[in-house]
Image (tube, rainbow, N blue to C red; front, side, top):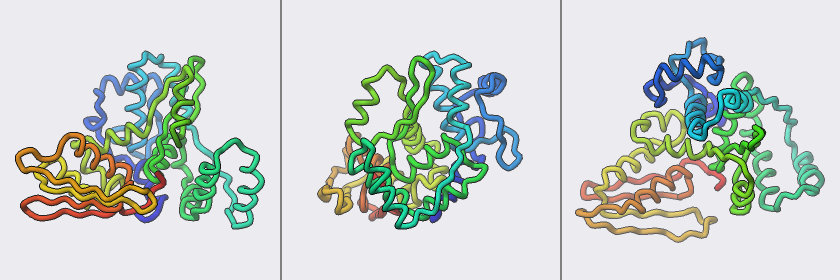
Length: 293
């Protein structure tokens, strides 16, 4: 998709049936009765189909239930993630961006790298236009999923023993250590997205959700078949990584470690091009859009 707004529409469009969710109708009815499933229906549809946002929310519920979270606390988490976000962003003119950089951000404890990332984000006119146009589709969880997909951010929520919830946007190793040094439950939204991308039964949804391009799907299928004789991966110049070439033997194929590496590169978009070769020919794909990694 060319426009960020179209991606946000896609992740909220009712797409998944109950069989795709990994829960029974009885459990879903129980959750609805206890008000931990949002009652908003897109396009006037009843809850026989779900959007990607609801899919991820159901995975979050399942994870929280493993930790024994109560129904009232689940309702609290749902309220936090599905509350409407109000955006009052001004037009980010060069003057306002300069003011933000030299005054507002100057007095924060953020690193220079993080400040630059914020400036780069707010300087992207297509992103700002999309945010302003979200209208009734705006909710916290949808925005987190959107940001994770577009910018390959490691995103999650932290919940403490008193039920307080806060966002976690992983940037570097220090932020990991800070997150895990506290007595809080960490739920990774990004990991649910990656699990979805690696689930072979969900492959047909990857292109409509802008998670992978058609060429990347071809690479993914070839890696799963594992009939490759050669893998060549080129990385972006700014990454500092060298070109990687892997020769394989037909009887052995790719190791599990290499398969996971290629799939991980497809997930995060932190490659320049991938070339796969087998006895039948060659499969090639290039990164389709820039991501901040």
